[in-house]
Length: 348
Image (cartoon, rainbow, N blue to C red):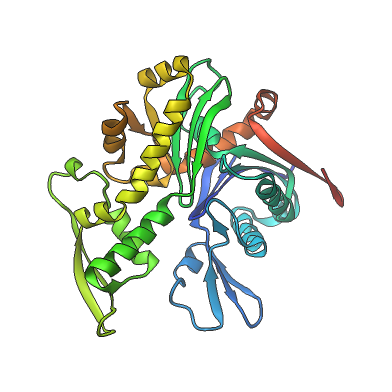
């Protein structure tokens, strides 16, 4: 009776948590800071992200997820435990909850099992998995139960999931190891190569958010931003100005990979569903969907109307919550992938 219904978007860059009747109550970076000497967890989320690239030798700030799946199990468990503690209080911290977690459509059985185990370890009474494009479609308000095709492109920090959904199931899907993190890495490489300036991942992320675009024609005039870094030639700090055109060139290859993935899914889509997609358009979700000009570029490359969902970044988290509310229906339709229940010392 004290347990909560909790939906988790376990993202490579950001973790979002949905609680029934409250909405999205947590949106923090998926980062953990730990003291190597003592093994003590110093911070999780926003506080830990501020330590990235700024920690002394004995403190490490790590991201426990890579490409949408768990890369460091113990750090991921510590991070989830810290986030669950932030959204609960009092007696709620001593009871087990019902949890639904979104996973990439390309996750293996081993990777899915690791997510379920992590949920159990941090206090889940019942844990369920749902594929992220399906959860994103539910969170975006699409009617996935109709016999009509919906094309969803969920662009997260580590992966981009592209899926055609109809009758409560995924008909065709493609999971790409490309997302916001790859954009940041591309910007870092570009600045180093063309300006001889070494910058950190936080600076690259700020460039992407503040002036990033992938379709220069969508801007009336180029945007610019001053950044500081380390000049790799003399080894001294230096400030330069980067424009939105530079960012567009830097992430061009990653964006092309996403568009090729969309075209591949469209080629494999049955003709009747393809006709529905032409009529209904493509829906973009995830934090990467907010990149300036992305919807216009996809529309120009596919000739299909493309829109960014409302609250695009929260769609997966919202979808996990809605899936929990109608759990029996989604179980019957096969939308929920895997389950694990806690029964004392045993789980199944």
